[in-house]
Image 1 (cartoon, one colour):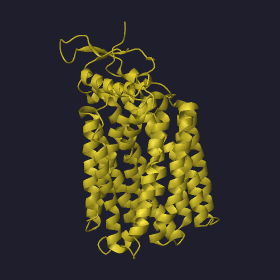
Image 2 (cartoon, rainbow, N blue to C red; image 1 turned 90 degrees about the horizontal axis):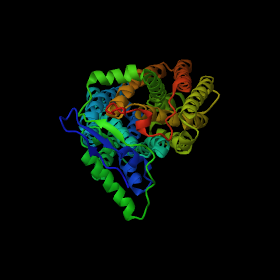
Image 3 (cartoon, rainbow, N blue to C red; image 1 turned 90 degrees about the vertical axis):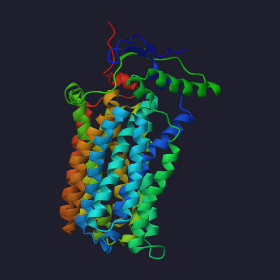
Image 4 (spheres, helix red, strand yellow; image 1 turned 180 degrees about the vertical axis):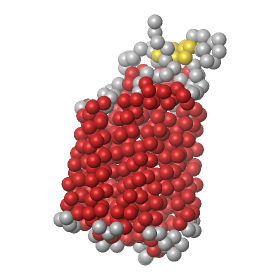
Length: 490
């Protein structure tokens, strides 16, 4: 028997108190088809991001030879920075709206923006129109991250949260593989090639986005969001409906493991309280989140946005064949979170997050030295990146997991947005632009400097996590970070 959300007082919407056991009921649910479908419909966002990032790199040769765009290596880096800038601003704006208006509304709004912008990119007529449309595409994806991360965290039972979050983030690389394969075929002169080929590539994301929108129609609002936004009855209805599905299939629900929460009704959280919570109350957690996200953003965006340029400029790989080299790279990135993810719940966050960051940094520095000394060929370079990013992919995914689960429910989406924005602005905007310029120089020694910067940032992040990381494994979100609206028992 479960405890229903109960209204205790109704003097005003700001003073109304109620007790709810909804978080405990969501955490006790066994993993079933409901969770699988929800995670698939929402988590596929990472596939879209992987697709977009890969296309930007895989079609870089075609963009440089396009009569309409005629982009340079520096322009390619600038286009990557425009996409990241859009993601930063989109995350902040839509993250704020996600906490105020709800998860469900925003994961439709942001997907709609993405579909429109990526479809329009196929019709870009010059460099500046291309940059603007990449900015808007990034804004849609950045907004998706905040809405989707929040929703998945709030529906996933605590004992599965680490593995699920890492695996979902790893699907970014399924999108990368899809983008690579699409680029290989659509850039083939026998199929499309030339100016038409890269334009058709950007249509892939728009088609996928429309299918994803249909897949999300059944997903309810997050009961946890409803619970702290003065809608306990609606939250109760959704959770009760989910539980009925279990009982209809003969699945017994285990007893509740956590006491009910006593909450004070609120409709929004003042910005001053948000900032105080992030940077005063939880300033150590804020520093950890910022460090993790900044390091992985530089590491990934610097290397991956200019991946194709290294292959074409230093190894002489034809632009139309770049996609084949991205496939093993994507495989390593996907397998990392999938195979290591369980350990983040079993061994724990602090050990696994710090270990994956430190290993990634050390391996990048070593492979960068081999590259600079010309001791490896293009196949060996690809295998080296495959191994490096097996660990780095798990590390990067854990950064999003960290900021999503270590801050209070009322500001979760905005917390994700703030640290994603700060981290991406510091690491993501600088990285592609810097690497584009380093590669433009044609000097391997200059590129090595960029690799060493990325390696150092990963090592610093790993040490920061080892010192101050939160052991959030197998704990409810409300236990890891007490809701701002929770009333202390006397």
